[in-house]
Amino acid sequence: MRFIKLLLFVFISTASIAAADAQTAKCLSYEPEKVSLRGQLLRKSVVNASNQKETIWTIKLDAPTCVKADAGNEFNVAVNRLTDVQLVLSTEQFKKYRANLNKKIEAGGTLFGAHTQHHFTNVLMIVEEIKAR
Image (cartoon, rainbow, N blue to C red; front, side, top):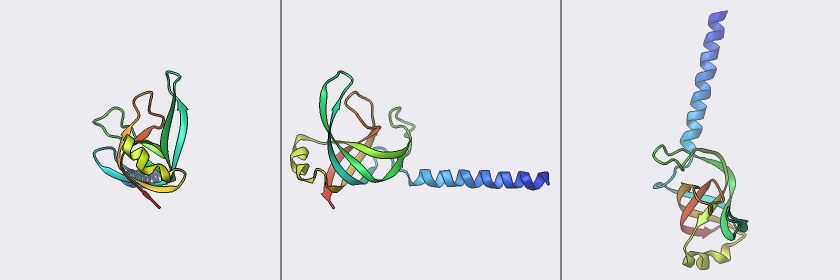
């Protein structure tokens, strides 16, 4: 009976590890890999660590996702349940994409981990393009 319990424990443990590995494989990767995010484009007013007001744009994702850790960068940590991503845009991009605020979009670009007082989500995206959906 002990042998059967041991086999069952090994089987369940192996299945759990395989499921976790499969989930990690589906997770997004940090830069330089390009990714695409789908959700609602939002503008938010926030206060940074120096007590200064800032306005940021974020994408509230249609569905939570995850991001794999990047062992080569201390800021690019694993995130298991990513729901919001701060967008990094140029002045021209703010003007170009302003009409998409509060609408469903698809944003393409590269991800990096938060590391300054101006970063308000765990993961940020350097935006290359935004498409209305």
